[in-house]
Image (cartoon, rainbow over the protein chains, first blue to last red):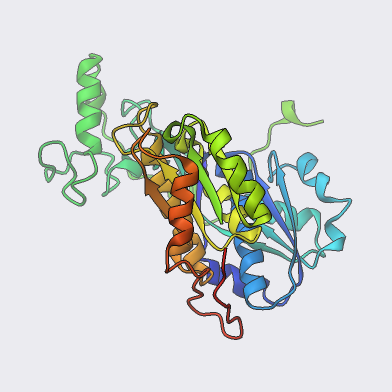
Length: 222
Length: 138
């Protein structure tokens, strides 16, 4: 899941300051799961903005909408019938959602209300932890399904570094040592041999340096 | 004034609040909850937006929640909502949490005590030039 956090209200207010009619658009998928951009958060932000405008004696007209997915055309199309009535769109989608809305409606002014942060897991109620950097060359099969790029502060492919203490990372003692987890899991599942493989440095060209990455699958195309 | 309250604090809350509602009309709104853990920050903001000067969340004592942690969740959510209203310059005291031992008072008695608070003078804007508000009598 993609996680995000709401921007400070002052930053949001600055972006929408020139506009009077605002369409606040949430997304009911990832950012709803991390309590940043779902229907409730749309309501909270809209309510706060309305009260703020009222206190400042400003006229602000807000409509609230939450799409099931803000990164898929079929859902974004639901905005078509009324988006032109608004001066700006305040998106509570992830970065992909904001850009998708702007691509579908190129004349619309679309601004983000969230800072998109990482691909992560809901660890417990109110706690989300980064799990994947989207490196484009997944090696979880060798590392007992613990990502050394994401979960090891040093991103080591051939760990451990030797600095961990009591199973905690020396960089951040709140974080479990990824390599301790890898070795323990491999040992428990009788796969310690996996550690004999030496992994070359990551090929970062699969993640970055060539503009936006694409995934194309003919079997999924019409 | 808007009051969200756990029904457990007054078993006969329905009968006790009706006369007050009749007497004060739109100046007071009660929202009985099966548990204070049902409260959401959005409820609190909507209440303020609808014109409430003060919003109370009345819960049973921590450790005494019938459902375990409802009142603790109410406390955390109220704190979150306080952060939001501070961002728009409202005093966080516009939202207040009150713990009441279950069965020790009735909702009408409690509300009369709250109304009698000398300090109750509507919200205190932190930075709202030109928005001077006058003391209100309920």
